[in-house]
Image (cartoon, rainbow, N blue to C red; front, top):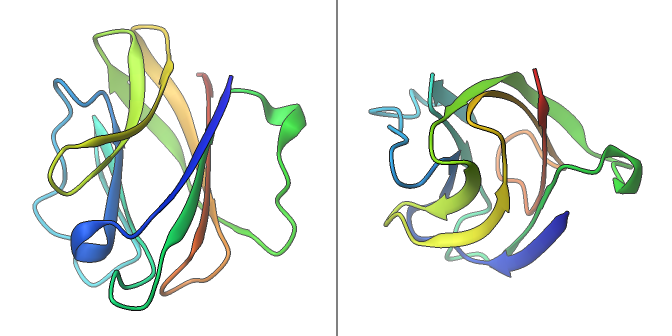
Length: 125
């Protein structure tokens, strides 16, 4: 499944997690990506400067990653059978089914400081 949207998220951050139980990092620590065992937080283009395009998929064969850089490759704990991209207010922007347990998450962005294209690939560990 592949879902996508374009948005200007509040506070210029998105989280990849099971939105019911995921725990975001306490801060970004001045970095583009920060994580906990149940959440990956990613900075975006400043919401004052425009929108960011986000793709969430579990289909590696349908990815277009030209001019994008891998910034995260790790695992996320999922307990409710789904993974979502949410904004800082925990509003679900995108969601796909995922097996309970640990899933592998890979994140690519088109800019190392303020990306406006973010691609998230979810798969089994």
